Image 1 (cartoon, rainbow, N blue to C red):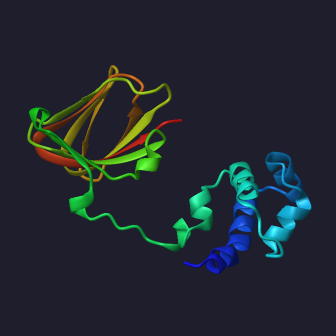
Image 2: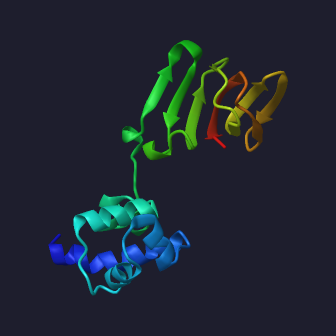
Length: 186
């Protein structure tokens, strides 16, 4: 990629980032310290910003500097993670294998896992951060969910939603089971 390729993409990407945040040129000026007229000139492709100016703008717009200048925007590609590349934790002692499906940058906000249980396999979790909720979707088998003092059982196609800021357990009953687990931190 040449410098001219980067500079040809920059105006539109910068304008798109500003509009996605719902910010006016004046708001960007206040947040970044870069004048409205300079931001406007950059967005129209009439000015080539310095690295310092770009850094101030990316901070103000809460966008990734490398992504703004990179070869393709995230929305312009499909990321494929092969099964052999998917990180997994094998908790053999508990009879539960955990495949991590969410992107590393989502950790702490929104996480997605595939849980694969042997018959009687169990996943016991300590309380997560206050306000954390989980959604468990049964793909195969039967699962018992305990959250604090509440309990319920789900089968293929069912979803359990429960508090995860208390001790909670997921256990395969009546055979092996598989489920998708989503963890959402509010």
